[in-house]
Length: 378
Image 1 (cartoon, rainbow, N blue to C red):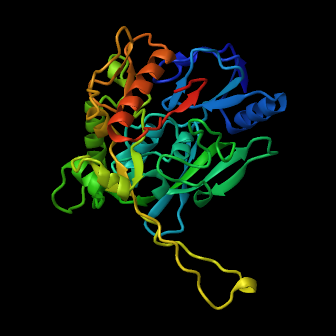
Image 2: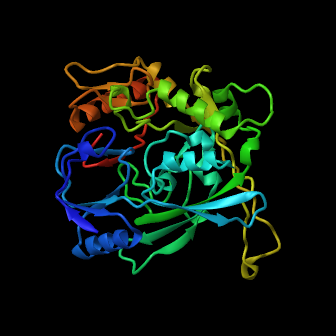
Image 3: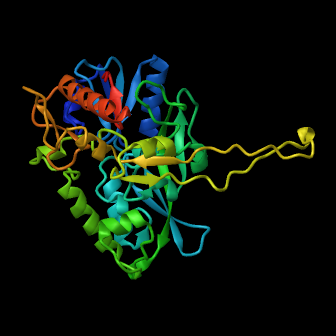
């Protein structure tokens, strides 16, 4: 662990906003990361960890606390208890896209549709990242983490992380604290070992993205290549020369609404069903069982609707910006708010609030930000 001269967060985040924090530490190994966290907790500092900086929107006022940069890396292959599969244990600071490239090169399937997503492996479960119908929760086995003020790390199975649509119990949601204050040290995934034969793509969202018409197996490198090209066309692959990529990715989450609300939206608004939990088990202790099963609670089905469509049909076009602002909507993707060069957090916030107000006025929905906000108000 090393304490360094604090670096402005605008130099470490893809949205390129944020002042230098009061204190900054770097950790290149797991012991260094644990030591940095425990030292920070003992001081009583406000704190957060920083990986790739791709899902962070930092304010213009210096963060009054400690930022810990997670720079650990490494992939360990482990046997899987399931035939035809392999497990990868990956350090939290490892680049997510480098992990995807590693898996694809070796014929390990299950994360190829998430090619090109920026950030680190440790941040992936926090956000429950996903793309084209594929999410990390489908392959995540467990994480090694350390809870705030804990003596040491523990291993936590994926089912205890509260994984949902772009969320987990570890995520800082706008306006609220996470349910569990902890830092991921490593992540273990269970992937299908397909070799060079490729795999049959079954997810409809991914099939549409790839332009597939039949159900023949396709090579993983081909899938990755097509996904990277699609993301690049939308300005979602980092490129210093392209201001459309100077963003935090999708700034607003696709809205999750009830079927009733979805029916009130225009029919042409893209929507996808949120899969119900068909395996829910009701456990009744024998001591209180009276011989009658309780009446099941019927919940209205939920639907995911396209935030990009809502934004564009509220009159906010690609490339839109407010007068004299250096922040704008991407010219390639309506969900990305971009820094066109020297934009402050205040300018990005102003644009975000304007978009929220237009969508709310037009459709009655309040879009929620997807990045973690530090010293920023919307």
